[in-house]
Image 1 (cartoon, helix red, strand yellow):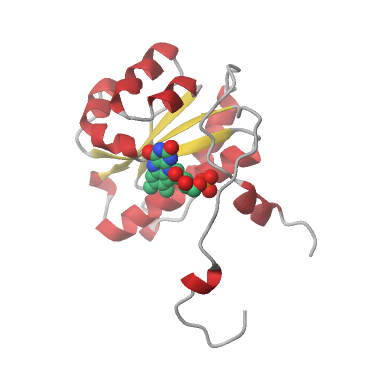
Image 2 (image 1 turned 90 degrees about the vertical axis):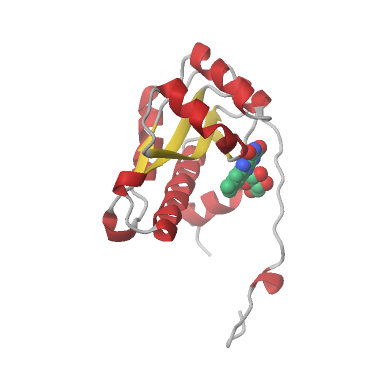
Length: 173
Ligand SMILES: Cc1cc2nc3c(=O)[nH]c(=O)nc-3n(C[C@H](O)[C@H](O)[C@H](O)COP(=O)(O)O)c2cc1C
């Protein structure tokens, strides 16, 4: 099979939790957000909203909000991703769109040579994060993406076998 950049990116992306000191150029941050914006959404309602945090002082203020404080400390950029309840039309479908948005962002990060991790545990601090950023109650936190230039190291992950996950098939795959 000839090389397929999309599949290569999907299969080679790993969560990155240690980053170099080197800053991330703003135009790369913009690209990552654009990738999120181009995710599909029901009725094309685009319910996602993004915050961009790069100042070391502000990043430090996220540390006590999660048990992944080490990841926060290492990150050069935090992108809290919100769903706007005022833009929503269907609970499940809007949350599905948010997942698509966040995954698009992770794949864009990887394709640019950057690294990132999707932080979910930090959702317990949603109200503190809204307050820290001066945002309204209509914005519900879906994830914080921590990103930067990845420290070089081998990163492994695993998945269950396809046979255990396909619950019905009427052809040999
Ligand atoms: C909804 C969600 C929440 C996650 N929350 C965290 C988190 O709080 N901290 C963390 O280190 N990784 C978190 N992750 C990353 C997963 O641990 C990671 O994707 C999984 O172990 C598979 O590894 P891989 O991304 O390298 O393939 C989260 C991923 C998802 C999709």
